Structures are given as C-alpha cells and as structure tokens.
Length: 398
Ligand SMILES: *Cc1c(COP(=O)(O)O)cnc(C)c1O
Image (cartoon, rainbow, N blue to C red):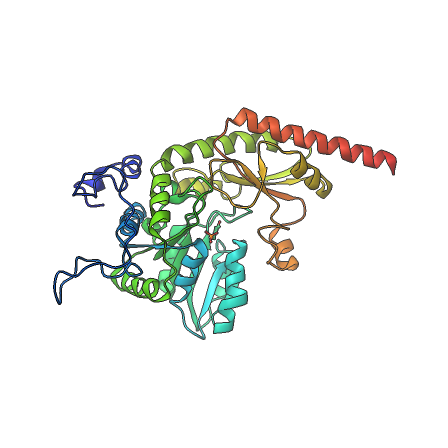
C-alpha cells in the first residue's frame, strides 16, 4: 500500500484501510471500479503505467498490492479463481518436471494435476508433507517444486512450514503454500520460508460466498517477474468488479476470522464430547496431533473442521435435517456450510487414496459461519438426534 508507514500498522488496520488512501483525484474512501480495458498513452514511449487491462488494471492493482503486502511478499496477482491461480503457478514448470504435493489436499488441485498437468508431462507424488523421511525419499532428479496445504482440507493435517520450506530450499525446490484456510490474518507462509502463496480468495478473503477469485503472492524478483509474465500471458485474471468485491470483503477479515475461530472451537469441543461422534479433526483442540506446530506457526485457527460419525448411516439424515447450516460445498463464508467430502469436494480423488488418507463415508466437513454458536449447536444437535431416531426405528423394523 502506498500510504506512509503501513509497515508499522497492525494487520487489522491494514485490512480495514485496503484501497482507502489510494485515490488521489477525489479522495474516494472506497477505491473506484475502473472498468476500462485500454489506457491512453501520453505520447510515444510513455505510459501511465497502465496499457491494457490483462497486463495491469487499476482496481485489480490495489488488490494485488494489498495481498502482496499482507503476505509479506514482493508481488501479488489476482486471478479469476483459485484454480486459475494454481494453473498459472503450475505453468512455471515444464514437461518432465516433478512435484511433491500434500497427500490430503483440495480435490480440484488433485484433478488439475492428474487430469491436465500430467498430459503436459508435469507429474506429482502425494506425500505426507510433515514426514521429512517420506519427503526425502520421494525427491527425484527432476523434482522442481513442493505444494503444501496446511491445514489440509478436509483432515486438518498440519505441516511445519519453517522446517519443510527450509528443507525445500536446500533441495532447490520452489515451495508453494495454499494458505486458503488460514489467510494472512492467522498465518504468513512467506515469513516462514515459502516462495509462493496461493489463495482461493473465494473462501475467507472474499468471505461472503459471493465472489470467485484466486490470489498469488511471490517472494523474490525473479519469481515475481516470471509470475507477472505467466499471469499476463495466460490471462486468467480477475475483473475489476470482482476485485472491488474482494477488497470490500477483506476489510472485515480480522473480525470474521476471530469469530469463525471462536465458533469453530466451541462447536468442535461440543462434538468431541458427543456420544455418537467418533472423532473431531480440528487443530485448535489440544488432542489434535498438529496442535503444537499449529500454535507455533500461526496466530489462530481456521473456522473449518471435520468430524466422523460413529456410523455412516447418520450422514444422510443429518444433511437432510440441518436447517440453519446449509448442505453446500465451499467454505470460509459468513454463512455456515456443511459438506460431505467423499461424495462432493473429494469425489475426483480415487477411493483407495481417500481411504488411505481417511476421507471416508463417515466424515463431514463443517465450515462454521459467524452466526451465534448456540444456534449452530442447537441446529446440529437437533439434526443428529433426528438421525439417531430414524436409525433406531429402521433397526427396530428390520
Ligand atoms: C476452493 C479451494 C481451491 C480452489 O479455489 P476456487 O476459487 O474454487 O477455484 C483451492 N484450494 C483450496 C484449499 C480451496 O479450498
């Protein structure tokens, strides 16, 4: 951001002020939507800094500068979706290159790698990125990069970013971290040694289930120049209206993340004690295996957790009986959403891999919104109780 002394401001202040001090002509507090795709040149050999909107566009640039600064990187790039951002990043690699990728990961990323990138000769091996021995033994002579999700979605596995990014640097690998679930408000991977951060900004950054967007942040001059070239050449860029909407959402990120974390902690603790729940996967709980690493590298926890019912037969009636919580894909918005990963978000991952990781038929993922926790617990406990009654009746009849 261009206003003076922004480095000294706390992140809450920087978020609230995104774009608010950038419009010199009118002083507009909300940065305008510049719809123009072409920009007049003052004379031959001169430019206002804007030539054609795919390369650079004023509203998008304010957003890109803001995310670069929030993530402690050098350059930001706004894309038309999280997948477009990942595709742009993967274009750094060439035929014959190999990537190491988190074992439990977003289904769409797996699909992009296996169904598309593989056809261009870029291959991937899926590894528990918190197991250094496993990482070491999966490095091939042609391995060029590592893609980490932490926490993973849906099982909330935690990777020690300082450790693994440090290891990647020694091996000469580009380290890429998908920071969608924590956002720079809670975790800044570049400060821990990552080269690239990617966001599905559709989730927490946008925060309202109403804008599809992806963001990339790079560290280092060479990587930033390469990414600028790819971003412009591929052209999967974010439009001005959506850039504005995303900035509008980001202004309240701090408030929302704190409330998401609070609600998720209360509800995960409630479910952990529930007699029909087999397991709860949430790093904020002291029983979670990644709890300590999470506390070390992040200042807070996401609003998403997963839980396993004791019997897969509960799943269908629970999803039918929840009312306040919507049965819907996606995550990170103010409204609570619940999804069934095995059938919805992770259906493209082969069954054997899903079972190996633990994304099975008993697992539900809950993106906890900012409603009141009491109302959310009441909705869920009612749905579980109705499911229990239905199953009991079915058992009595058979
Ligand atoms: C949703 C998501 C993506 C893909 O982003 P889109 O905006 O849906 O294209 C990538 N990574 C993670 C962790 C996600 O949750």
